[in-house]
Length: 131
Image 1 (cartoon, rainbow, N blue to C red):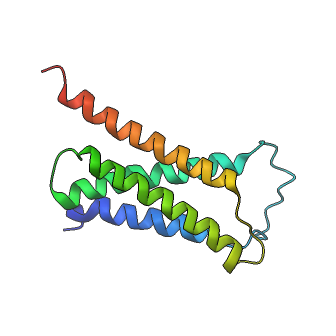
Image 2: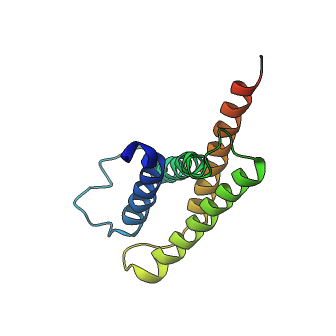
Image 3: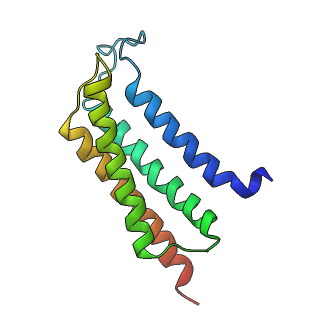
């Protein structure tokens, strides 16, 4: 039974993880001066929204019981990721004391979502072609 809902559960878990980690206070005992990777948070945002789009696309495919999503459905998943990213950035400013919205985070979110759509789209085209 759980196998039938695997991607939906995975997508929901991904969204919950993004929400919790995006709105959690920054003072969790990690010393940011020890990590010497420039713009590490942007890479994290990219990966979060890449995962959002990939798991969201697979969940939609599972929900609709189809093998491949149409372009319009992929656009909807992409737009959902972008809007969700903007909402989370707004919540960081309004609901937390230790976080602020950052336009570059929105750019990283959108880039990750776009790359996720590209990967899902390429996996579709390689499976359907060369018969």
